[in-house]
Image 1 (cartoon, rainbow, N blue to C red):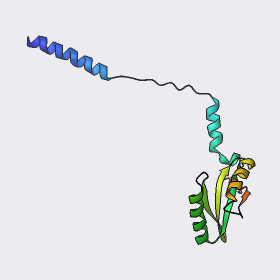
Image 2 (image 1 turned 45 degrees about the vertical axis):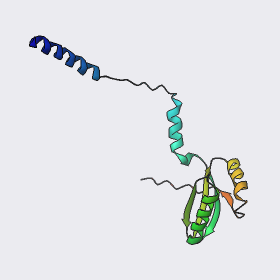
Image 3 (image 1 turned 90 degrees about the vertical axis):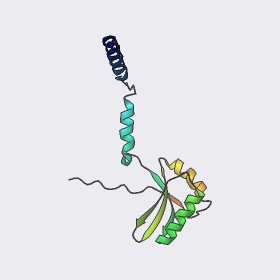
Length: 127
């Protein structure tokens, strides 16, 4: 009787062990151009971006302008840049001039001195 019980336990233990050891295989089927597009998107230096400047002046004025802009608009990224001797508030990363023009129309309602520009690209250094 004990031998029969041990034999049944051994079989059940082996079955339970085998049932928990599962393997899975995932196949990703994607268009080959997706990788190329992702690499292109990573390199923003290949894209001419437009920005809108809404403020230029001292640091305290820039902080205040940035805070007010963030309260009024939430659809574009905003950054504070320093170019000697002024702080500047820049808005957006617009891919086309048309897109920037549309945003400028909205922004000009509160920031009459706002204007569109293309930031200078960082110079690449070779070693």
